Length: 140
Ligand code: UDP
Image 1 (cartoon, rainbow, N blue to C red):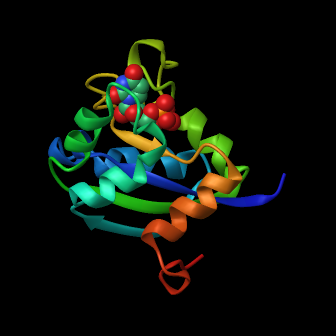
Image 2: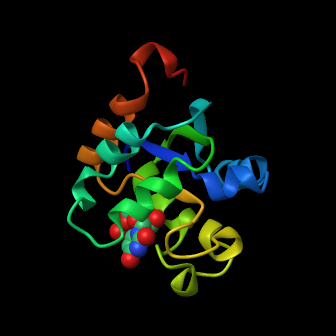
Image 3: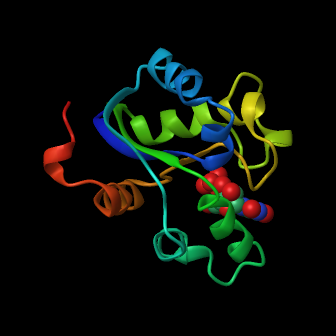
């Protein structure tokens, strides 16, 4: 399997509860390397654009407001099959359906405040990484 990069976001519900280190440990224990990371506050415009694909969904406005409620940690994870690997470390969108020991099973508060985002395809990973990072900020 090829080395890939994926975009991860530790969401405001998790930064508020001081869980960044514990979540990062789960990534590292799974063999993912954090090759870029920054703590930022998303504007409404940024969060709205990032989740543009969900614009018509009933949860869009609430999702945008939850993503701007506090700081997020945006990061690039690198590793063998990093996109799928990260999705399995994260667990299902709805924490009630997430496998035990996944980030969402352990930490998510709800289907919306579910602690982490992770890219779901190589195309989205490339676009989402470019949304937050310049190439020079990524240090493998
Ligand atoms: N979401 C929500 N209600 C839903 C489905 C999704 O609030 O019924 C939120 C949730 O925060 C999720 C995000 O929208 O992480 C993006 O949804 P997606 O289906 O892409 O899930 P993900 O890829 O994050 O697992």
